[in-house]
Length: 72
Image (cartoon, rainbow, N blue to C red):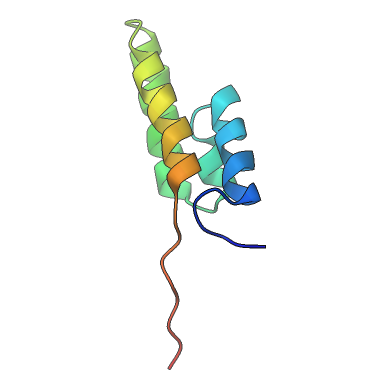
């Protein structure tokens, strides 16, 4: 299974972020991005702009491409 853009993992992460902003990033193991997106969405939903962060969270999870790891 590939781990790049369009992989099954990214599709699952994007679906998770569709339901809860930041959940897809958490599934991908990106804790800081998950917390930032969740908190921003929660705060901005109070002024009806949370949908912006919500969409950003979905797109970010779908397009995430992990950095290659180099071992010495």
